[in-house]
Length: 281
Image 1 (tube, rainbow, N blue to C red):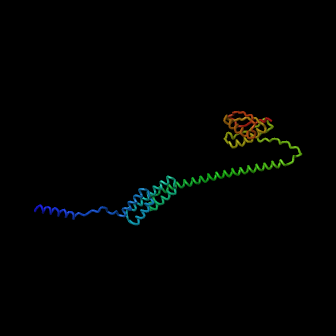
Image 2: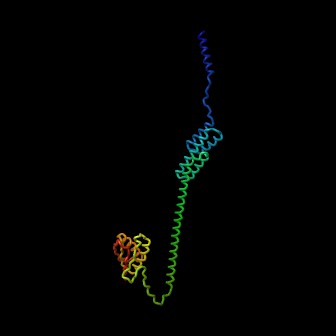
């Protein structure tokens, strides 16, 4: 009898305990806002800034007043600034400017956040504009040189055509019955052909004024060829002789390639450089 009562009491306690325990649900539903914020986190982490902006805008409408929105808004603005810096380093100023504009739109109340990138973009723009201006000027100079060459070529062709026309006309004229006039007496440019020698000073050699030196030697070379002059080059040092002789020979060869004048060197350190020309005819 006691055994039966004990078993019945035990069964009753088990049933009572089962009735008092609360069953736990297998899966609780996730809040929509929690899920939306998680998706925004994922977009920011993966760098999908356009999608993140859209998600943030949606949350700003659905969760007005939520303190997390300002934090995410700042994170998104900083992400745009970081992207803008990458574009700037790659030389893509347009996309860098767009990224800066998006960051400012997100955080208009914090202008200092974008000051560094803004200044860097402005400086890069100045460099870009200066480079473009330099290239434009270089292009204009090239075009001007090309035009000058074209005009010079046209002038040379015109002169050649005029000379050809004059030669053709002269060939068609009947021979003149009058005797040809005697050739004109050659005229000297710098020397006195009747003197035994003529001195031509070269002060520009001391001043290293090569332009004046070349201009003077043009006339000297003409007189040397015309009057078959011997040349004595009196200079302060040997290297000056080589320089003057080189310039003079080049001009003589242009006038008469087969003529080689007699040239001698005299070193006089205390004397102003000069040429002494002695006509041979």
